[in-house]
Amino acid sequence: MVMTARHSPVNTARFDADILALLIDVGRSDIVPHFQNLDKKDLDTKASATDFVTIADRQAEKHLIAGLKNLLPEARVVAEENTALHGLPEALESGYVWTIDPLDGTRNFVKGDAQFCSMLGLLYDGQPVAAWLYKPLSGEAVIAHHGQMPRYLAGNGEGRECLYSGQNKKLDEMCGNMNAMGFHSDIRDRVREKLKTLKGRFHVGSAGVEAMNIACGKSDYLMHSKLTYWDSVPVVMVMQALGHHVRLAPCGSPYQPGDKGVLLAAPSPVIWQELADFVWSV
Image (cartoon, rainbow, N blue to C red):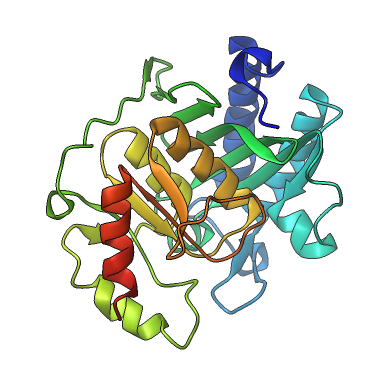
């Protein structure tokens, strides 16, 4: 059962402020000092030579877990680096579960590229109910709660409701983030070449940053093809709160936390289908 916004005990301005204060503190102490300042000893790899983990990832995750446990002691945690070491915890379909991506866009971070963010998602009985996305360098944040429009907070603390206004645009008037990283090797190269021909398509290297861009009206759609709890739950929460059509592609099934495959989010079912037809007509 999805908890409605008015029944959620975490759907308060005070709770959002506490979460944002935690993200700001962790960003200042654990992430920003290491940006463009990494030594070889601060960098490691996981599943592949380009699947990086840094001292910033590890320190930030450790402090986020501790801070979130103080705010919501009954919640379990699914965090990127902790899961890589110990696997997923059990019983993720009941009660509160935090999803934590301390540094979404680690590859960019390692290269000295500012396109990265921290992401928190909150599940209740297996369904997304809230998300907090934060850029440590600029101090910008996007906050989404089930049943409400997302809010954007500038680095100076000023906030506004996010209202996507591109529903009536045609596909060739839109732009968005799409890549072929998570596609099966049998079709990955063909998809990559196909995407190069799509007008308005680009690659950011951080699904969280791109979700924030869409929430701020800077782009229109995204395709995310390496699905995990920590980077998919917050993105889906923001996209759904904006009113976007969010489905697994090309089958069109609704996303459920823990699903694998390719996630496609577009302003409408029509645009979603146009994008899916374009990508999979290889």
